[in-house]
Image 1: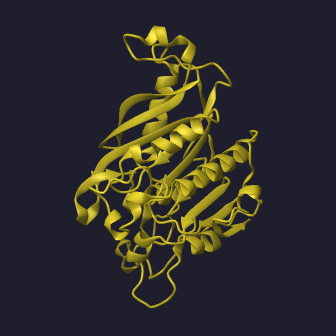
Image 2: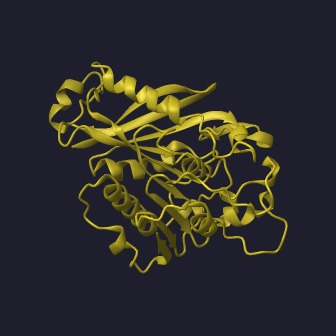
Image 3: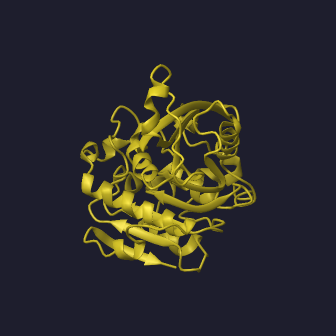
Length: 319
């Protein structure tokens, strides 16, 4: 098996988006792809569940390629993407696709706030049904996991409702929370509840400089600013023993990225972020893989219960 990528575009409700579907390729059939580069999908364990990774603001999708490779090795397909849309006062750029009107005080929690997930899943269904694509018949469209980083993680959390994302089985997020910006009309330091109708995993870094520098968006007081822990405590009401909060010692906002693109976004808030720790990244990959396996009822080399005893885990909680 080798990891291959199938590139495509889709319309995220008016915003152009470019995506890559990473899948297990059949390394015994490379001769067929000698001229086209289209390596047929392997048949082992197919059809495969699909993991969608929603990007942070102005974080290039290639930052998550390492995680896609890690999860494809476990018999999953992984989609990374970037929509180009409005960033509010910051102009336009890479976005996970967020309908801000759906996050207003009178509408939050009543409808999807993602502008990308619906169109993306619809396009995946077209790819799976097209006999001319290398993944035809190989995607399990009844089992989706949605994850994200930073704003993408927040979008994943807010859309953790299977009625909005057909086939949704689990949600994970790194460096993300549901404390709502006061600019959207919410009270200071308000944490919004989320559907959480599937297993949830919140991951964070103990040295997240971006979240620390962003507190002005949410509050003007001197209170402790720990929106990730507060999200787990106040926003997730699921109590089935399958949801996790994991905080990694020494990890910053971009620990999930390899490499960190220093030409855009706010990586300058963490001067050391271009040198993210490979060991922390490997632990993140293992945690996410174990959580997905447990949520899908699949075998896993290590369980989350085992991994949270790692010395690099500063704090964890479960409910």
